[in-house]
Image 1 (cartoon, one colour):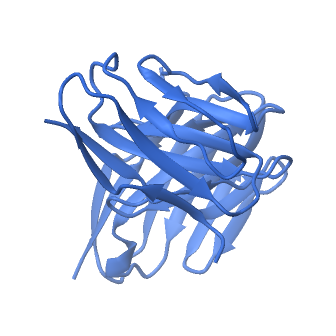
Image 2 (spheres, rainbow over the protein chains, first blue to last red):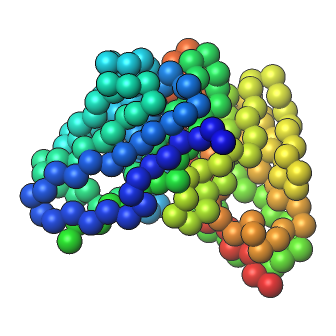
Amino acid sequence: DGGITQSPKYLFRKEGQNVTLSCEQNLNHDAMYWYRQDPGQGLRLIYYSQIVNDFQKGDIAEGYSVSREKKESFPLTVTSAQKNPTAFYLCASRQSGQVGYTFGSGTRLTVV
Amino acid sequence: KNQVEQSPQSLIILEGKNCTLQCNYTVSPFSNLRWYKQDTGRGPVSLTIMTFSENTKSNGRYTATLDADTKQSSLHITASQLSDSASYICVVSAGDNNDMRFGAGTRLTVKP
């Protein structure tokens, strides 16, 4: 079945650590996105990529980094510079020219 | 200020009852509007997508309406079931880039 897979489902980070969230899709979609979801707020765009080896900052990119070395993969690194990283992170993908987005099942990151 | 406002923030109804969720937006230029259902700890799943020319669209017991003049949309759920308990998110896309703006969601609880 085609889809978008995020891992791990739960992730715990110590203060000062970098952690990487995985996002893989087998939908052959060109564009991929990372969103952050906090209680009582709408999803906020962190980074997006329209094509391999290219990505753009979203509304809240500070403290995050991404790479897009393969079409299928768009990992997100939460760096120690992100002061409030505890949140639910969602990855999404979309085929260029189409309006429909597909979301992954999310990763809940908690700082301990 | 968020460009997509949803109301109510939360709603509790009895199984079998109907309910209507509201979405007001100021996003411009309007491209399309989507309603998503998000179960707790999961990614959003698309219910309906409407473009400027569409006034209503149904997906089973879910019916979405769009008034592009007043920039309002509603999601009506008929004969609610316990499995309808979730957050419902209104997403409005703008411009040629399909830039998505998310509402904070309405948390629906259906009780037996």
